[in-house]
Image (tube, rainbow, N blue to C red; front, side, top):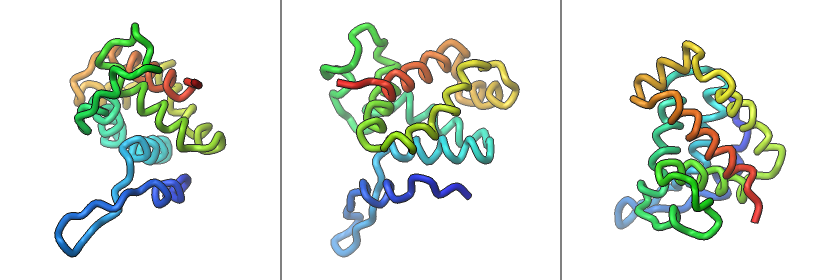
Length: 147
């Protein structure tokens, strides 16, 4: 089991009340993607990739935010890819370079989106290859974004 980056989970978790007497720590979705990427890289399970794709495509819609329209998001980036860009941007602001560098091997999936294990996850997620590549490209652009 890879526990890289777990100190960031605890550092950035927010206590969320679930009853009058109980609160639990909840991590930001950007860090959930980070842990899923690390998990996918070590165990290559389809469910990790489908979880990553779900969050990348639904980020900020899940949180009912207007961030998809904020300054710093490229104006020509399609609405559907802005969530992926924002997750990359958020991770860039949280993680130091050594942890960020652990993400970049995952992005090499862009190089061979026709690999059999990827095809199964993409098909289950009902995403076509071009959408998959452009989603990961937007995520990568967010990771490399500097203001």
